[in-house]
Length: 157
Image (cartoon, rainbow, N blue to C red; front, side, top):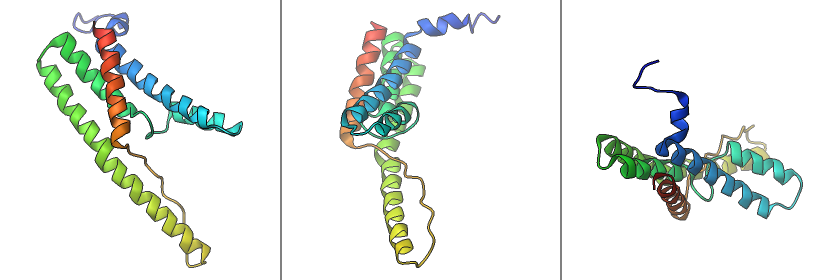
């Protein structure tokens, strides 16, 4: 085995990996629990599980939590290294995307689906809805960022 790679067990002891993994799982779990708290029917449990395993958007931002945890854990374990600089810029891109591009495209797809449904009601055309990709609000990104930094501090201390 290549000495640079090491055994797979090293991965599960790496604070950067652990920070990223638990930030992602933690943020998705919080989203699912929020969904369950709002649930009124038994079918809502299924929706909460879909949120936990797949759906994007919502409180807190798992994108921001994961990216910030990687960046923070890298800073705390590697210092101001090239790896930290790389993770910092990827984190900025992820957060910008969550706040800007994905949110805008989500709002546009909602408007398009509403227009399509109206035109279909009036028998003007048949409309197949487009997928609505949800971006994040500033508060969702902020809470995700705080979660990611906190988890990174815990695993990198």
